[in-house]
Amino acid sequence: MEFNINKSRALMLHRASFFLYLFVLDRILRKIALRGWINFFPNNNIAFGIPCPNFILYPLLIFIFYFVVSSLISAYQKENAGEFFAFALIFFGALSNVLDRINYSFIVDYLNFFSWSTVNLADLMISTGIIILIGQKIFGLRLIK
Image (cartoon, rainbow, N blue to C red; front, top):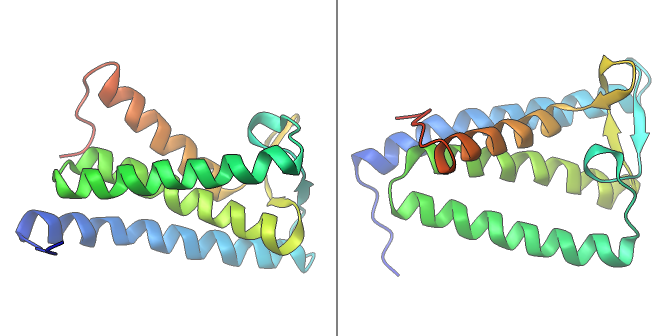
């Protein structure tokens, strides 16, 4: 497989590096929360607080990561910036949550926007990526050029 970086792809990678900074910021905020400097909520569930036993969760995570990484590579090869950014957001957000699941057996949620919901930056990244994909696929919007 030939790895060819043209100007368009280089620009995509440069812009997507911002999501790496969001990933690092999320990891730092989690460490701050675990040290007790900000309040956090240990989340043992998956999206939207849905409980999921580990024997289902881990195979599901493997499948999701395979799909996201494959889609990320495909969007890069097609030079589809909007899809690439959406899947990059989802990838880095999911990676941060999976690292928590592996290291602590729960997800560290530290942003309390509503009295009934606590999330983290990674959750917001995943949600934003999904919103971008929905906007493109269902509504035909070009959110990112």
